[in-house]
Every structure is written in structure tokens, then in C-alpha cells.
Length: 575
Image 1 (cartoon, rainbow, N blue to C red):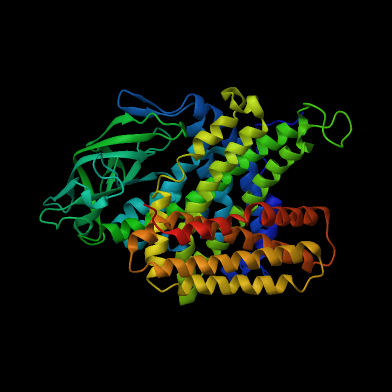
Image 2: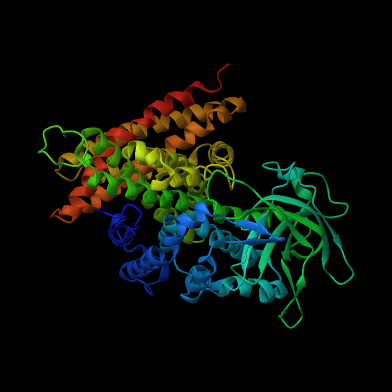
């Protein structure tokens, strides 16, 4: 019987995405030939082996035991600290950090694959690195030489971890309502006072120090977001020689009791004239923090994909072994995976996950190339909210369907299926809810440029449709027809949205449906690219045939959502 709790990394999919799906070796292009798709596949395979053997076994303990606050110190379950040390010693932290920060600078397409793997194996554990990675990017963009030497170098080495401190009891989405203060001292440091909530990995015992990146308001600063500045505040103060000194005046007040990701300590932190150091300019806090937030938003797409795939793998393993009832037009003893509706659910999940995975690779590559061409910059910025919003929303559906495949056993906590459903539920909420992503998409990326970037995207998809029509294959023909119809609906929806420019409430009332429309369309595009790459080989292997089946299924079962969502967009605000 298959082990439903085991994790198998999707190495073959990533090999295909790196080398074939987009018509060229993405990794070689991104690295100037220093690495190839084959090298990247080896990296993914190594990460998958590490994740499956070291991190994945801690997933259940993290959920059932969780993080605990004892005598003012957060403790993680046994094994977490050793796993983190192994993660650091294997070089995974440094590998993903940018070269400009002292890291190895793996390409964005490869980081997308690693992000999925870490999160599939243990999403709660992976959040620690995700926040550290985001802080590395923020400090790399704005920090002084002193902060780079003292803090950034330790984050890149993995010796210390990082957090993002934005949210307060009365300031969630509205960052302009932040009331934490920072007062200058004579020695160049700042005294930070206030309370922050929902701080992911805000305290723990797996690394010797934690670097908090804090938004605070300086004396005389204007009201609202323009009055915010950014500060580094370590859990343990650092002496001039780089050694660790005394504990900073930062107290862990509580750990939040959450629906899921119990192994990730979400903390309430009190700053009691804690020592901090300015990052960038006074009043430039949001600009610096948005670097970290954008990194985290892309990371949420990878996290959602990973959790969804782990849930799917569990469901598929269960369905392959479970015998229940006679299976229509199949011999006795056929497992439930061959029941027509169970097969539908499994294909529904797997086709969505491939679309998410492929889009993650595509966006990761766009972000790498964002400094090469203005149109690439705009397309990368356009896709970040789609990647974050669409994947996280659809991952909830995937994890729910995984429970459905397992029936009553899926609803029982001991089988583990429910954990993925609980864990993934936060992903459309943190780092900006889906509505925040869609408001950004509609306001800054569609209305502001009159739909030019969206139009350019549609033209790219048109080229894929035309390419598919060159193949004499039924799946190519059906995929081209379906994608072409979805494109027409997407163009109408975009025109309708632009027509709401004089009535913003109409546009923003349907911004989430519009984001989901574009995400669903992008998923269809990813499958179309994959189908074209498969058919270009001339001979279709068993794996290739499965890719064509997946593309065909997505086109008939998921792509039609575009038409329904276009109708919703056309309606604007109701009532």
C-alpha cells in the first residue's frame, strides 16, 4: 500500500518547465549559460530529496504539537532546530540569496521550484525562510554598509533569521494607521516603542538571533503612510565586534492560536524602547518594506502550489489503494481512483497544480529579466498579484477536493488530509488579501495604463493559439479553440473594466473576479504552451500523453470559468 503521507518532489515537471515548455532553456538564458536546465533539475532533485527526508517528517509534529511559549521564549517541536541547521549547512539559504547580497543567486525559475518544494514538505517550517528571504531582498535594496555587514551577512549565511513587522492591533491593511514610534538617540540608534501582532516566526529557538524589520513613525512625521520609516531591530543586540550581547527590549507577549500552520510561531511582540537602526531614509519605510512584501507575495504563490500538491499526492495515493464499491466498466478489485467522479477530481487537482507550477516558473523568470526591457518589467509587475491571488484561492479548492476524494477518512484529523486544508487557508489572507492584490491589479496595472499591459499579454497568448493550430492533433485543436474563446471573453471583460474608469466602485467591486479570470486564463495558457512543446517533439511518450490529457481537461473543466467571470465583471457593482 502506498504511503499517503510521503512526499514526492515534482522533479520531472520542473525539468520539462526549465528546458522545454517555454521554447528554450530558461535557466541558461537567466545565467548566461553558467547553469543549464539540466543543472537546475539536479538542484531541484537534491532539494526534493532533502525536503522529503529532513523537513517533511516534521510536518505532522509541527501541526499537532505546534510552537509553545514557555517563560518568555518560543519553543518549537523536537527536530525543528536540527532540521534548520541541516538546511543552512546544506547551503540552501545562501543558494537562493541574490549575488549582490553575498548569495549564490539562483535564477527565479529555480527559486520558484524550491519554494514549492519547501512548502509542500512543511509549509510552517518554510515560512521561516520565506520571511528571511524577503528581508534579505529589502536590506539588499536599501541598507547602509554597516547594516549590511552586521545583519544582512548573517541572514544570507542562514545564521540568523528575519521577520516583517507591520501589523498592529488597530493597523492591519491600513498601514497608515501604524502607531509604533521610533525616537532618535544620540548614538545613532533609535528607541522603538509599540506593539506588533501576527508576526510570523517572530520568536523561536532554532537560530541564535532574529532580525526584525519594523515599520514605525518618527517624531514630527506626517500622518498616514508617508510618515513611516523602516528599522532593523535584533532580538539580541550585537556588539561592535559582531558578537552577541544582551537581549533587546522586545518581549514575546503571546503566540496566536491559529486555524493552521501551527508549527509556525505567529507572535505578538512588544517593543519597549527597543534598540533599532534606520534602514534607508526617514519617511522611506514603505518603499523599503514593499521590496520585502513583493518577494513574499510571489512566495505565497509557491507556497500555495506546494501545499496543494502535497494534498493532491495524499489523495492520489489513497485513491490508488482504496477499494469501495464496484467501478463502472472496470473489473472487480479496481480502486476508487477509477470511479468517474474521483478521476475527475484527481485530474481537476493535478491540472490546476501544473498550471500554478508553470506560472510560478514563468513569473520567476520574468522577475529575473525585469531590468532588461520595460515591457518585461510591466508584465512581471502585472503577474505578481495574479500569481499571489489566483494560486492561493484555487489552492483552497484543491485541498478541499483532496479531502473529498478520501471521503470520511479525509475529514478525520489523524489521516493528515485536513492539515493541508487548514494550512492553506491563510494564504489568500496574509501578505495582502486577494482583494488587495486585485485592487493593485485593477488600479495600478490595468486602469492606470489603459489596459496596455493586459492587451500585450493577450497578444502573446494569441501567438500561442496560432502556434497550436500548426499541429494536426485533436488536443491541439480543442485547446486552441477553447483558449481563443477565453481570450475573446477576457478582452471583453477588460474593456468593460476600463469602461468603469469614471465609476471606480464598479471596477473595484469586480476586481477579484477579474483577477481570478486572468489567473484562470493564464493557467490555460500554461497548458497550451506545454501541449505545444510536447507536440513539437514529434513522438508522444507516456508522460507527454499525460500532459496532453491534463491540458485537455483544464481546457474543458477550468477554462470555461473565464466566461462566467467575464459576465460578473460586466455587471460591476450590484445594489
